[in-house]
Image: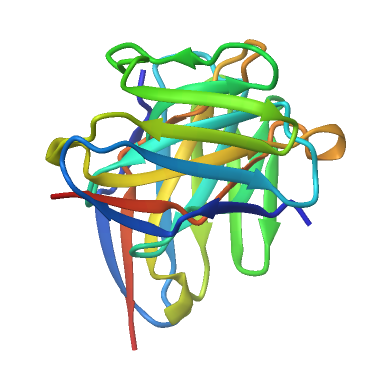
Length: 111
Length: 117
């Protein structure tokens, strides 16, 4: 089943913060975050594994609460380059490692 | 590292023709590759899982006779859209599953935009 992302869209001014949520009705082994710019393929941001991980890179960080089957992506002091559609992909175990993607969150950062 | 290429980047073809799309992992071996299609402003929908040396596993609702997948080597998977029709027009993206230290990471190709006239 497809994970649910919220919000569907968010508009920020440069320097503002944003949180994107991803929740699943199935138990999760890992959550994968990607950013996709218009007309391009998704770019990998980070994986969070079972065990309540938190990770960060530059001003983008994420957390994973396996009990709540939720993950959140935090964008701090947003930059214009952060604009794009953010997808979370959920992996619920099994040997095929296939991901199920949410519908995406469109983030627009304006000057 | 972990670069995946796709060829062609875009293709325009007439209805009824077949189109082949290649997906290559350039600097790593990928026993598993995935094929997705994406309609404008929509999410990535998994079509099939491609495993080297074995038959692909198709998702429910995907016609395996229409979308032929061949994973002939550890660095190459191909998707052939047979007898393409306008409703097959879409953005097709492949990804390759990392191994070893990259386990569980999927690396996406740049995508192929198919337009069927």
